[in-house]
Image (cartoon, rainbow, N blue to C red; front, side, top):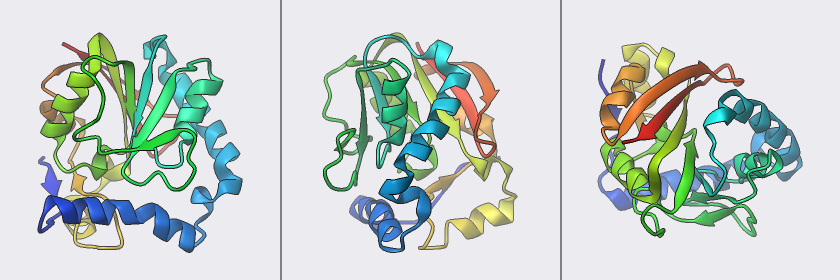
Length: 207
């Protein structure tokens, strides 16, 4: 098993590619990205969050790669009122998500009590991400990752996926062990089956 990376000519090209996804989805009117589906998506996220809710601390919650902000709204509706998201393209007039790069976040050290993400397959480098999350997360707090269906792809499928410009996964991994090895600043705590059947929830604690 190994982690594979999409080949970009530069970091700027990576940012440009990842930032296109929302605009293209809205232009194509893909249902799950449309405003009228926001409430339905929030309801789905609430079910997902309830699976790992015991690890979400009272205090500040940060959602990485939150795009439209449905997961942020879900955290808020579940009682975690101080929640915010970050995304390189949060769209227009987003009340839940601010524009930013989760590889180099504009937050003070140890600013957050819980960090959540379901898009680690869209990162430039997991080691850089792990270090940056560890910087802004308080000690003994939890990082919660929902890791998607790429866990189940065969080796050929993983290679082909990263060649398609119409897809936005920037990395693939062979299994949870690949991911755990990259998050060296954290101790793995538990894995759970997500309420979304495509995902596996993995909980890490900052060392």
